[in-house]
Image 1 (tube, rainbow, N blue to C red):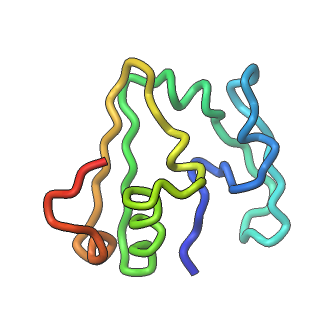
Image 2: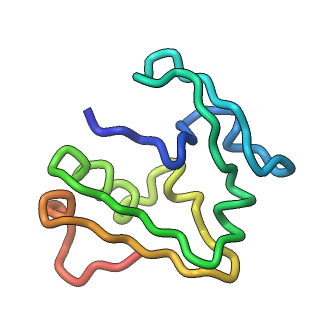
Image 3: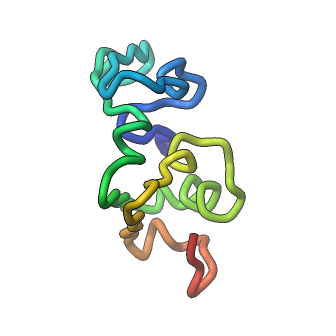
Length: 103
């Protein structure tokens, strides 16, 4: 199953709405590592450069949702204010995307 989290920020997590703390504790009972720390969106979106590295065919559907359909997933909330957002994807992960597609 493809994961839908970014930096341990999972869909429906209350940490997605964090605006003050730079780092927050996350508990996801169903995850392999249920107790985690994560950077929050204020930190991620203040970064000079954010890089997503996406590999494997199991990520193709999620990547398409994030880039094509603007799904409500944590990855779509990463928008560096004055920085650069870079997507590095392998051929398998990009298999459902149109050639030349950009976010």
